[in-house]
Image 1 (cartoon, each protein chain N blue to C red):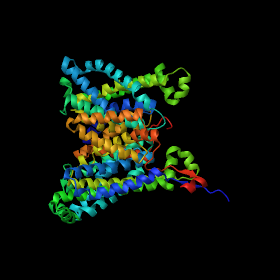
Image 2 (cartoon, chains in turn blue, red):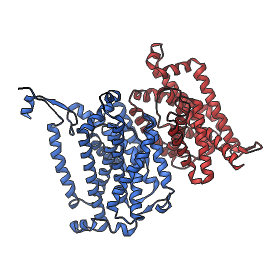
Image 3 (cartoon, rainbow over the protein chains, first blue to last red):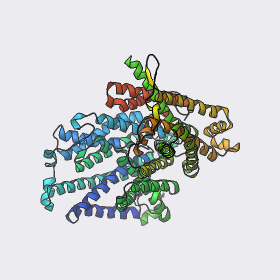
Image 4 (spheres, helix red, strand yellow):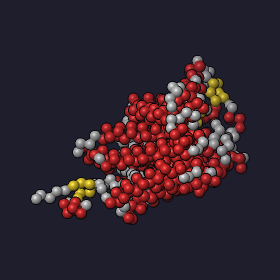
Length: 352
Length: 287
């Protein structure tokens, strides 16, 4: 009998992670019944930053597209959501989808422009696109121009699903809004991580890794590198736009400077990914926890906190370029989200 | 008539942007290092000048002579200790490290000098103007432009007339072969960054005398500087001046139409130039 082989990405650690993640998500769903509102707000922050970090990691860590202009999609997603609510009278929750859609619409022309630029030029190009978007939006008087605006009372008082949450937990309307936003953030984070994981495990992920490691070699075996860049860029814009809309649904207030903030939506996100470990799914998860811990510990020290964050980011990049997870993974060989392909022979298959 | 005036003001403003950009162009041209902290280093130098001027009462143009060597040393050390470690085929480490540096500098300056707007006092020079017949120009903008031209001539002289310049060009073209010829790329890069910081000090002088500054304005200057470098084309210092002028003229014309469009017009000019010529106007190198 001919020996049969199989290529697999499955590992025991991966399966355990899967079960653990399911349990964690289930816990996350019922959590609002047990914890105070402050914890829900913290978790909302962690989950949305995690989603942004995973998306930037997909773009830069896997796709090799180092953008410093992701705030363009956070901002445009948020503004599109506000426009849909204020100008067209949509309910805020479905309006989040409008935010994601408009972010993709912005991503198409900005990709046409930015993909003409290589490496560092690309980074600056994306930043300029974000600035152009911010300055243009600041001219939009119907949404408050440069000073911004708030979601009207009728809209925030009538968000789809809030009544259900109120009756479920017996909380006041503002708290119910936060719980709803938290659930949406949880769903978005789970879907984003799940989608990225799936993406990396199938053909597209293999092609991405090939292009990242050696573009010419990848091209020579028939990988369409240009198309891959487009797919990754548009998917990232979609997710980033949705997250931006959700973040501003929770705050119910928007201004060009906050929605297009390079510090909040790009600098923090880059530090999360770099400190945790770029090019892994585990990295941003670990990174966002470290980021949140630092923020909580140093919250009273204002600027010192950012200073420390910058120094830690530099130190990690210089001395542990694969981040904290890279250190752990190199020591123990554990991959919680295995995406490596391993060739299994027949004997190993039996024991599998 | 008003349009000629706008054009002249734009060209002179371009001189300021070219000054911001010259140091960046130098580092980028020699070691392909994208320094995202460049704008914040300009602000740092501006505060250094401010401290010298207010503490000793000396004229800002004299203070530059003291600040420039200090900034050279800072640049030299920064390159030797930190930035040389990030250079390589991967563009991510230098981008992220200088990005981190930018955040560190901004917040350190905020801690040291608060968020108040400051200005380097320059005496009667601030308001002096010169009647050129067709247009009247401020002495300060004119001086800025002439300094930019002077800096670029000076850098080109170093590049093409000295042994140091030869080492710069050789290391830029091929660091491995250059090191076979007895050049230590790490040292050459450190001198290059030091030199870039001298240019940064001169840029900071005009930034600080012409307008108010605070710790947070670095990134905006960085964008103008980058736009000038990219429009001009990699490694061409005259191209950088041309790029600065294009951004400056676009900004003044934008502002003439609607004051809110000043910055936007500059960015749009950048995008338009790159859509037509993706490698800039005068690209020298092939990468």
